[in-house]
Image (tube, rainbow, N blue to C red; front, top):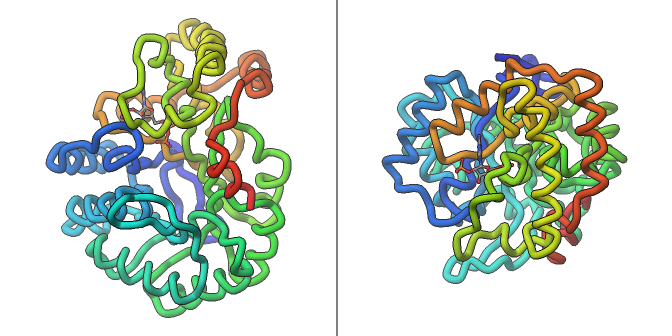
Length: 327
Ligand code: ATR
């Protein structure tokens, strides 16, 4: 286990947390509630503390799941959730991003109720609202800290410039962005902004949404799986990307570990300012992922892995998704 400090706070957390989104939505059908709660309880037993959810995952269902799982063991978990994106509750369709003070206050009250808690450890703006200056949104989030309903605040998929502006209003403890062997675009300006402002980078999709495990050589995506809507998981790009995983598998087999563990060790190896939240719905994958704490990559291995991102084909989101990142 490796512990790291969250932003400029005194709080330390195990560097590997659990991304909970896939238990409720986006990666095929939701996990049955009792199985999901069992997994969340087992995660605590395995030493996981940091659990990541959002208002929009399952339109509240993912937060409600965590509320059920954790209300009687709140002191054992660190709960991160997010607000901003809005959806039609009937159709699930995305209707926009609302970073207004009014929506921030409405959202936090709803999240606290669903999570069955009176405080959220880390509250993120999930996507930056182009119509609300970041200073206004962060001022509203900072009010929640002074009122005691939120302990620390963060931004997700924000640009370096936005992070720097936000940090002038209130300490930004975490920036959550996609970051993996295959997705390194944030190294240009987001990571430097994290380092300069003292924010922890919380790397989501460190397994490339499962691609880096190599499983999609043999497995196809379920109908309606959100990944099949992303260019990286489509047609020739998918085949080319899966072929790149061979290079990760070769390193894994030489070290006697799995490619998913290599992917996580690579993210953790980027520095003390990084934590990661791989997602899984399965105990065996969770256990294997935590095995990444024990893996160290040599300079040669890092060099081989370091040249893969430039060869990845296809964007990580569809056009709409790409238009709201790095904002
Ligand atoms: P996200 O942050 O979006 O959840 P991720 O962490 O990069 O993305 O990858 C999550 C995906 O990797 C899930 O589809 C998960 O599937 P399971 O629920 O079946 O585990 C898959 N995954 C996680 N750990 C894995 C492992 N050790 N081996 C294979 N697949 C794994």
